[in-house]
Image (cartoon, rainbow, N blue to C red; front, side, top):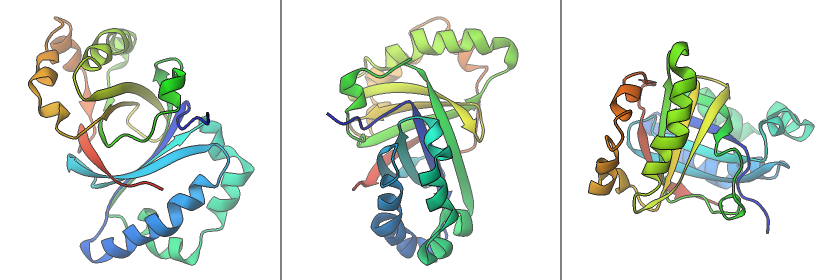
Length: 221
């Protein structure tokens, strides 16, 4: 069975002027996603909109590895944008535009069921930095305590963590949800301080504006 998830992500966030959103959405849905998914190593993709946090629009691309973005096939497409792309890409019309590339740090590898899983109906993402002096402790705690506990919550499909190879801040936490109300549940809230280390380690997180954000899927090929 073909994998739909790999070891890397390309994430593109943007806010778009209201008078340009209709054509922006048409461009993404009718041309751009399919164009990118035709590049070898792009495994799956979907578009999302924020119901909490921001920027509003998100395109999430699951990549085999981050090296896909250095491939000749990708470079050719990137260097030859269509007229529609020149007119509507978030890089050109976005009032906020973030393009980050990430490589997975937790888990070390995806189990076959996870690698073959579909794009989730909803996502929660935290984009953050931590001081260098707590980096090692922070990563151990996040990987062995924080994410595994939240994965026990009903409605959580899985949690993954990434380090940025392009863009900032350094870390991305990505939770896949069955629905966007998961972080409003009592079960989710109960995990917040279930470990005595949680409050102390959370105090070191420096979140990017709009983070953490909750997003719902709006389009998938």
